[in-house]
Length: 533
Ligand SMILES: Cc1cc2nc3c(=O)[nH]c(=O)nc-3n(C[C@H](O)[C@H](O)[C@H](O)COP(=O)(O)OP(=O)(O)OC[C@H]3O[C@@H](n4cnc5c(N)ncnc54)[C@H](O)[C@@H]3O)c2cc1C
Image 1 (tube, protein in one colour):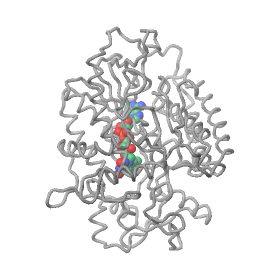
Image 2 (cartoon, protein in one colour):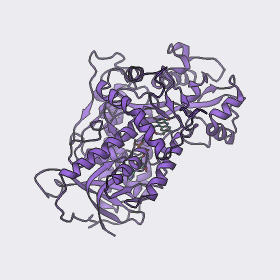
Image 3 (tube, helix red, strand yellow):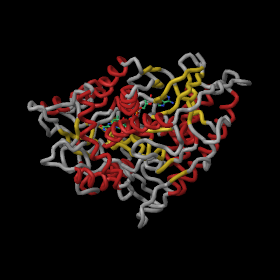
Image 4 (cartoon, protein in one colour):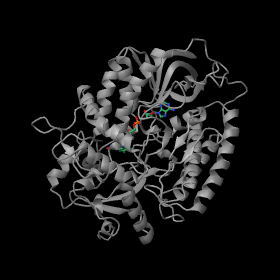
């Protein structure tokens, strides 16, 4: 099959992709969900903590959730956008519950609300400590049972198709995408609307909590098609990933600190009191920087997260998954502290979008971590991202349905993917070498603490690597590795350029050369075409 036609192409099967697909199908639309791996593989699936939402109107309020989000965002959030997401929280929670997501509840049926760093109230709706797995498994059952939705697993979107690219009409709009199938065939998917739900780009860094699929593909595709990116320098580093010789990318949830876990150096001393009045409950940027500082100062490889003062039964009951995984790795968190390090975790920036998922390109919509709406500002408050993914999916489905009512594309077949003059690569080592170089370079030069010199160095290195990739890309048949590398490299350059543009320290972005904040908070915006793509 080289060509396929559908109403809506959803790229990605995390919370935003699956939830939007269901809501689109409910509106009678035919949907294809293309996803790079198995349906479950996504950041959403591994989310542990939960979804921040005001569900206890006695002890909490929209105002408090809004204030906490704004405090974390350090002046860069858009207050009206924050309001929009906070107020829509309860409705999406009820809707997800109605779709079969089994959140943890008390005996009286009320939600068990967790507390996390930066929150002044208990407001994190969760399913034990496997919230993401529970959400994705419920949505997956629904999606697989819906005959209007086709799931294409192991299908990777390569690039969007625009009318401008092929001179198809005066107005530039998105009319589909090329998708690489698991058999290595590039399918031309003709769609009246495309939703990018491809998540973040943690894999751009050497150490990350993200699964391997998080290579920034949707952001790269959207940027190449003409959508600006915003605040790409705002990469959140999670302070606590398990430090272990063999276990990769295992997140130690913020909820552990929320429930009383205390950070210590390897010699057993507390240190967070030197960095923030909330000590171990400080927002994650402050905590990640504090740990980075302590590690560099002491030459240690990790710090400790101590839970041993808590009731052992509570630990097992509240964190069954983390407890078991730590135990499998040889660490009994009831009796010994957990060794942890920071790692790249979440991208606050992304494709410029309205909170309802509209981009500047007609026919192209975005939801979830790939989008930048202005909710998170310069730092995401814990558990606000699943909230963003769910609320955006809901509104994007509505936007797409109303857009399709007014704007069906006259159907003429789109050009097939051309493989003229290309051959199979016999130099896979080039891809691997460039991949490793980018991730090391980003970790060392564009990590938790930045400087002008390091950023300039990173830009030089990445520009060179991108030239090499461009030559390679046009000569050889595309593979998933090559496509991911190309996207990763573009996203890396967008992050570095945005970091260079921000000549201040704000929220997550800390640079030793500009430690103060500018009086006015401004977004860094890179419009299409500024970076060769
Ligand atoms: C370990 C961990 C724990 C977290 N815990 C929390 C938490 O407790 N609360 C919270 O609010 N947030 C949490 N987050 C963040 C949150 O999980 C994500 O921001 C959110 O799930 C993003 O959802 P999404 O739908 O945008 O993308 P994702 O869930 O990442 O889904 C992206 C999908 O796109 C697919 N894809 C990517 N590129 C392509 C392509 N080219 N073609 C086809 N498919 C593609 C992927 O395979 C995947 O299916 C956590 C993140 C991690 C990594």
